[in-house]
Amino acid sequence: MSRIAYVNGRYLPHRAATVHVEDRGYQFADGVYEVCEVRGGRLVDERRHMARLQRSLSELRIAQPMSPAALSIVMHETVRRNRVGDGIVYLQITRGIARRDFAFPEPANAPSVVITARNFDREGGERLAAKGISVVTVADDRWGRVDIKSISLLPNVLAKQAAREQNAREAWFVDRDGKVTEGASSNAWIISRDGRVLTRPAERGILRGITRTVLLDVIEAQGLVLEERPFTVEEAYGATEAFITSASQIVLPVVRIDGRPVGAGIPGKVATALRSKFHRHAEFS
Ligand code: PDD
Image 1 (spheres, rainbow, N blue to C red):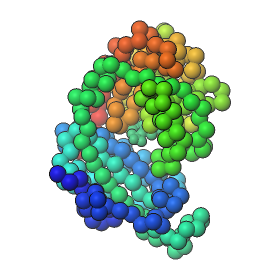
Image 2 (cartoon, protein in one colour; image 1 turned 180 degrees about the vertical axis):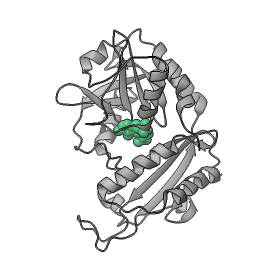
Image 3 (spheres, rainbow, N blue to C red; image 1 turned 45 degrees about the vertical axis):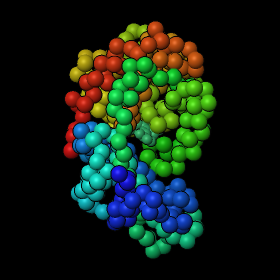
């Protein structure tokens, strides 16, 4: 079955799904995106992802391409046409097509919209979670507006490649104070020796992950003690557990950081429980 992409009003086979060379997404990475998990053919936490999308668009002063209701219909239709049961839907909106000039086009043109969807190997994901992943730390040299989910991801690409070259699956960015900010495509968490769940506050230096937001409810329901504060790389090395969160990976235990085992070097009980309870707290649409 050929995959179908939605591109500016049309559903096209992938080989025909192209954007213009002067799309500002292509020229300047002038755009935003969202990744939503699809589970059993339904979107997970669509409402929250759409709220974050509106925020990203408004921070960058990109016009809304269509109403949230219309966008929802197109996302569901893209999932349906690609027969996605368990997977993701990817949505990208750029400032549209204009002759290359750094400042915004005047008059403002129509934003470009691309939506794709694909299946994931859910069992493979469960196997990975049961095994745990390795992460490596890299310097956080990104711009100051990482709270915007922009498609400008070059530092994240380089970080992920550095991880791969060290046989790790994720890279954790570290700020100038030696504190972990977040993963290249995930939020970062540890469990301290005294059993507290630690993650950086979303107000500065990270993307406010939707999985992170929902997980705060799971943590509360589990009766765990949460401490939202930046933690150091040293603290992470000495943690009893570590994990990452993102829409496509849910909660993924981290068993090695920079080659050192975390706790017993196997997925921790807390991370495993949080993963298994996550979808009870998520919204489906
Ligand atoms: N990444 N931090 C960064 C830098 C991310 O790129 C992501 C998500 C997250 C987690 O956000 P959420 O829980 O809303 O997925 C945190 C997506 C999945 C991606 O780029 O593929």
